[in-house]
Length: 251
Image (cartoon, rainbow, N blue to C red; front, side, top):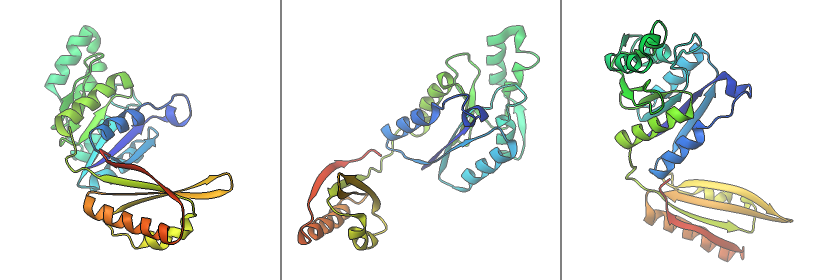
């Protein structure tokens, strides 16, 4: 699965607030063996929101967590945009969501708060541990939560535990730091099989150029084979190196 986050809030982009959603979601994904494919921080623009939702929907393996814009004020567009993107604009009042909102706010549920129960058709609910106004999700993979971390974080955990508790396909990673430049190792990098994921990070210590080279793969046998080729090259070229991170990943 490819996990995406969409964090909606002009106040984040203009500096009025600091984002806390990405770090929490990323931590929860990594501990379960998943990775972020991409994260978007966007302003409250309905057309742009729609474009981002459709971009993510094109990926048939996508799972999206969206934060913000599901309230009842005029600048809360997410419910309608989600319907436009995922249910051909069809919406209905969700009976369970209506009951939760009425029980929470009594007479003050009307005339505005009750509109938070007007959801894309077919929506299922995420529990709000703070005030019982639920988040919602579609197709078991598009999740919509409030902009308040105190509310959204429990929803993230609920969604992941129910639908994506663990990635059973675990990568292994091998990493070394070599006392040379990236340029010296490019021919080796170019010959790596496509099933090997490469990360190359240059590093300068004093006047010494170094490169931190990290390989990962679901194929542990192939990973060790290709990593050993690099080590043999370093030995033959008398390039000093140090091994690190010899372990199986959950990320």
